[in-house]
Image 1: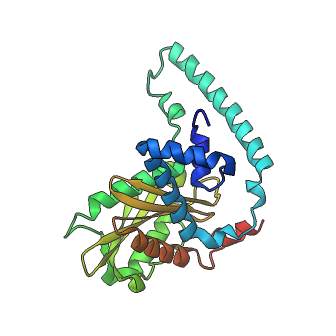
Image 2: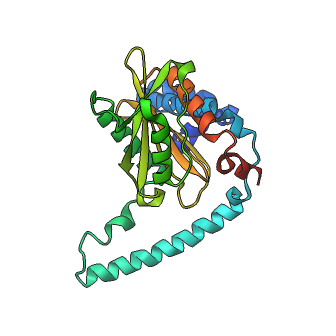
Length: 267
């Protein structure tokens, strides 16, 4: 194995590298600590996603996620993006909106990464607050649920995390991404040790497609998923296994019996 590629590192992390290449890869990793750390992170992320969303793995792939359909959709989007890019070049050439009108065209971050970043930022801001950590406290949880449900245009229950040692502190309404309805809800929970976790929920993205992602960002861990009804990001700084338990409980409670969460997987 003369040159190691990113694809080979990912294949090794996923246990899919051909057997005859494994010895060379292991020798390379032993001599390259940075690459070994990258592989360890990939394996940790994959393990976290499998643990949290393992039941979904047994579901049938929905028709809208078939490779041929996805390829066709990507081709349409590329064609549309080239059209917008050409329009941007014309605008710049005319001196209209230099650097501003073209800005959204070059923001290539996936929606999930934007939502995760927003959730982590909101978590960092409000978990540090004492008197103003939430807008509506847990003593008025019925109103909190109704208020946030109305703002997000979808039913939002208050997950019960007592089994994980957490109680509801309360919640608040936040500005959100236009693609996700323009509003976001944040629910905050706390345990006896004053550790806090937050749940960041928005309306569904336009494609309403299921998605699952794990990310470590700014010292926090975030478990994200999306379905045909909502997007949800659970954020905290707990030990990994504890974070998985909390995020798994939130996922089950917010998606159990949810038409937008389960039925699309059955085609």
